[in-house]
Image 1 (tube, rainbow over the protein chains, first blue to last red):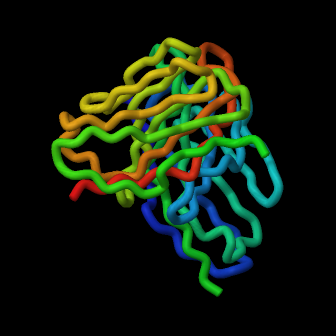
Image 2: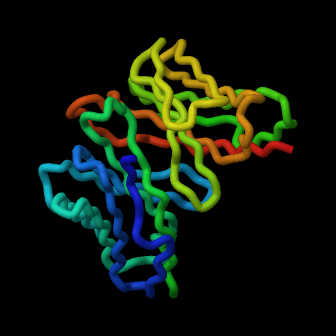
Length: 114
Length: 117
């Protein structure tokens, strides 16, 4: 079936380095993608979103890249800080499925080493 | 401040009991959602509601029930038919339903952790 998944379950980076979190999706009809950050014991928080008619979108210290050819999404975090340590989820909404909710991936845990 | 409030934060249940998790939002959002999260896993959709008095099953609706009598409230009942109810439950809302070209951020509550004893 259609799914959203992640390449790596855990990513460890040094403070100050850039982080790249990857996400693969299989629904070619997906038209909208979001990245969420979830800290331990809390609800997910919105980071950045991108529509399928875009390849790149930038926010504050974060950039999302979308490659529709290979159905791949990535989240880049510049100058990673200890406060960035969390689990990151990608989510997608697909047209043509009749589904009116986001489908989430399994998440990647980002650990920032001091 | 506007937001989503889930209660209780922690809940313990004996096997065979039904429990109801509360979700209230004062964001004037049309759509509301319930997700379940198991340790080390992503979020799985239980139920969602695009408008008042209407709701649809998600991927794992068996053993759960919901109601949407008011725009601001979307309670989730975990019934005794749910075989493995221990999990972290997350409620969310969005300004509009995610139909067609509508996109939109989901705003999440802080979650309710249910443990079956």
